Image (cartoon, rainbow, N blue to C red):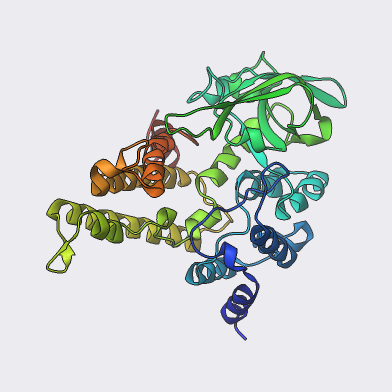
Amino acid sequence: MSFRSEVRAWLDENAPAGVRGPGDVPGGGTKVPMTDDQRLWLDRCADRGFTVPTWPKEYGGADLSKEQYVTLLQEMKDLGIRAPVAGMGTAMIGPTLLEHGTDDQKARHLPKIARGEVWWCQGYSEPSSGSDLASLRTRAEDKGDHFVINGQKIWTSGAQFADWIFCLTRTDPDVPKHEGISFLLFSMDQPGVEVRPIRLISGASPFCETFFDNAIAQKEDLVGRMNRGWTVAKRLLQHERSGMTMLASEDNREGGIDLPELARDYIGMADGRIADDDIRASIARHGINNQAFRLTKRRTVEESEGSTPGPATSIFKFYGANLRKERSELQVSIMGTQGIGWEGEFLNDDEQEMTRTWLGGKAGSIAGGSNEVQLNIISKRVLGLPD
């Protein structure tokens, strides 16, 4: 039996009804409840190594090749099956530890990520250190067998649900800013860590302010060399901006919404076509651009020698953010006044959610590295242009 046939049969037999079709993907951890079907699916995939399919088996993966991984994703898409777990553990800190972690760090942290036992968050941006991340001021004092951390982070996605954080800290203030940074891991569930969710214009609070007041990180959770955390931090950002799942995915129905179907429902049809010429052309143009983007991502996976491409991932972050914002604007245009209402009897639940999604999507070209930063990386690291 071929790998494709084998994996399709396993998926079809083991995926519960509650993880098929559009819906939420759990982030793991201890603070956000899962449905029974989500928990069952997570446990079954963890046993098979399919939560982190390309990782070595000793850390909870299935040791799949790149080609096998793409096949797995394709079969999940064809069957309408959602991923068992998602988040910064599997997409960011896990792959980074595989490259830069010690054997002890891998053994302690990676199996828990693979089993969905820990929700991770990212401590990078600070109120005065956004685009110029290396100017960060959160301090970590070396106390022998541990560090004492004081400072503040902002835009900490999911910090209110997180069990652990990977955090950039200043460990030497007397050297050039890129050379005095260390990359630390520590628990969020300890005295000295305070999280304050930030309410956005969309009404949601996915981001937080995070404060450290004599928080503790153990010395064995220093990733990479002391004062050389910038190298680790940059590599993690490449994982964040690409993510093998994102690069290999061929899903063209963001949020389960099909634009032609949406236009049929809100605009109507004439002679078998969407009645509004401009909307019809915009949908076609967006579909072509999205298909080209998907094919480019897939080609990058097939051509990449390692598990994650390098600085070129900034291209995907930049273009993908703009494409998602364009799609959101197009959805609102299709729905007209029904797509921009906040509340009221004239709006159903889906329409109210669309408004919030549209407003929340405005952050897409800022979060995870602003478009301006991505363009600088592309010009310097990809095109080789002078400063």
